Structures are given as structure tokens and as C-alpha cells.
Length: 327
Picture 1: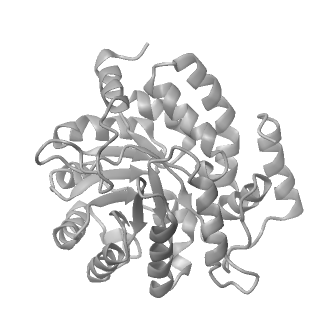
Picture 2: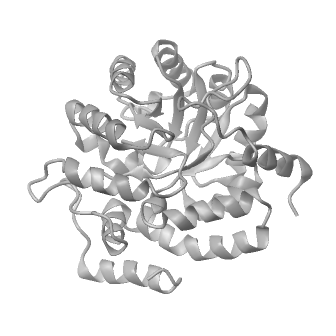
């Protein structure tokens, strides 16, 4: 049974005003943008010659738009953004803005290694239609990226950003966690609305929720593999790769958690763990794109140096879906 305070929080979210504007600002003066919900981190489709295929991008978005997602994240890790030029990143966001449903939030990845470049990219993302920016931790000089450096970086970006900022901690790719003490400090900034934490440590997620609750700060998690546990601890949603493949099921898990149907939620969560692990830490973006093809989306090739799956890996990936009843 869920503890009363967490259940009350989830019930309030379920009943929140659905008429909030597209910008997502919750009702009530001074409150931050409401980012609660499920988001697929949209993949970048490429042609056989490694060009961005904007036609296939639109086709995928039209199909994903049929699910009750809160919005879409463009240029998350699954979007291969480190392999894109600045002009490609901006063009993608512009194209997505033109075709995505008006009631969905568009959160665009604007993180760069330098603070100056991140500020410039964030401003540009706002100009081409992003509702909010998700900013990954700079990591090349990770040995010097302590709390002081990261607080300074994010504060500067948030000060100069015309749109709300979401922090992004993804240690599997960056090699560093955004320290809890830094998140607590940054949660007090009026233009920093939340964090996407992809570290997979549910204890840390609970601590982030607990320590930032008074700041009207929201925690999204970066995986469908521990979504139920995250909701129980007070997280408000997820940006998860699996939503590109099993969007209806991830949204169903969200609904079961928000309505307190924990037994059914647990059964569904169990069936999502293995396929989620397969398209994330095990096979990564090549695995995600291959799985998308099995479910009617365009996956296509990755941009080099990422390579397609071997036949043996593809067989293992297929088994992870079939053994859980999804194929």
C-alpha cells in the first residue's frame, strides 16, 4: 500500500487541470512549468547515406502522437545529438514543432560542453519552437565538474534562457552524476523546473524528490525499467527509450500507478524490464531502432561510428520482446 503523502501527490497530479496552456505553466502565481508525464526521446532517422530523413521523422511523430504522451524530447541521448551539426539540431526541432500536436510539450536538448555554447543553443532552440530545454551535464573535463562548476554552469544557462530548463544527469554516457547537493541548490532557481535522472539509483531519486519538494521542482526518470518504483517515491514521469516502441504500454503503466492499481502495475512493470534493458544499456540505440521497425516505426541506420546489430544480437533482442509477450 502506498504511503498517504505519496498517494495524495499522485492523486492531485491525476486530477490536475487539463486545460493548462501549451507552455505548461501550472495554475497559481509563481509556480514552475508542469512537466509531469511520459515522453519518448525521439530517435533521429537517417537515410542510407547518413543524412537526416525528415520525412521519416514526421511519419514516426504522427504515429507516436496517437498515444497520451505529455510531449516529446528531441536531442536526448537516443537522438544521437552528439553526431548532429548545430544546424541539424535546430532544423529537427523546427520540423517537429510544425507537425507535433499543439497540446504536447516539446523539450529540446541544448547541452554543449561550454556554458557559452549551451546558452546560445538554448536561445536558438527557443527561437525554433522548443517549450523547454533539457541540458545534459558537460563532461569532457569531468574531473573538474564538481558541484561549484555545475551550479555555475546551469545557473548561467537558466538566467539567460527564455524557456524553462530541465537538468539532465546521464552517468552512463557522461561518466558523472549531477551531485544531489547541486540539484538541491539549482532547484531553487525560478527557471529550472526539474531534472531527468537516468542513473537508475532509486534511492537517489527518492532523495531528490524529498530534498526539492518545497521548490516546486519535478523529477523525471530516464528508464521504463524502474518506473513503478519511481512513481512510488514521488517522481512525476519518465523520458524513456521504450516509449518509442511500447508507447501504449508505458502510458498504461503510468495510468495504473496514478490510479493506485499497484498489483496490475507490478505485473506490467515486470514485463517491461527485460525489453527496456535490451534497448538501453544492452544494445543501445541500434537495438532501439531495430525494435522500432518490428513495431511499425522507421528505425533505420545509426550515424557512424555506431553500427547496426549483429545477427546474434538481433536474435537476443527479439527474444527479450517475445519472451515477455510483446511480439
